[in-house]
Image (cartoon, rainbow, N blue to C red; front, side, top):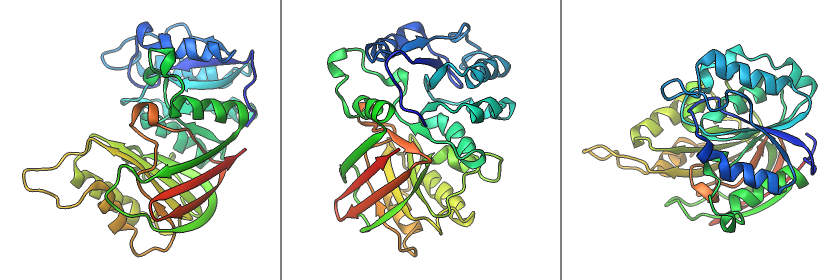
Length: 305
């Protein structure tokens, strides 16, 4: 994947929930401050109940950007729900001929997974325009800085302390291609044309606003589908705002994951700084060879295009 340069054209797209001009102001200002030309497609601010226009409308806007060789990166405006409703309408032949960064997380995992499974082209799991801080004084945050480093330099190094988790890491070193994203989305794609191949990969997972028994259900589904057995490594990001029932499930989200992979011997890092954690959501390129070194309370990650 080519690195971005000053003067490149990039575009915004809304494949799921609708957005407003006010919500996009900061992201447009940020991208322009990097010397990029920001394309806001006609119809970008459409509304169809919670969606950014109907399925045909959203698919058409995304298709135009996939086919446009002048666009060097496509920033998905926000998540929510809706990308899965248009994925089978998209023709990626132009994208394969002239790849570009697809940037986002959460519901954008549909695009990450579909592209990884079918085309093997890198995409970028990273902060989205709706999350960009309104004050430029806050742009020196990990999420924004790592996004810039990856897009313009193609190189990242992280040392993540296990800050969010009550579970210890499983130590070790590994190399492999990163894949994954939002756990709920990966679960929903099982058995489809967008289902990811995890064999000999380093899997990343994160999630938001789920009941703990839902986390257990989804992890067990991935395990039964063979998605956890042959990994090179596992990176667990933020499991944010989890819920429990009146009768407690008895384990945290991280403990659920740890139990599910206890029989395997690859490195596992918990509390990694990506996912639904706002300006701490560090960029991770999926489909890219990565080196991971996990120690008891931290993980070092090295990425170079």
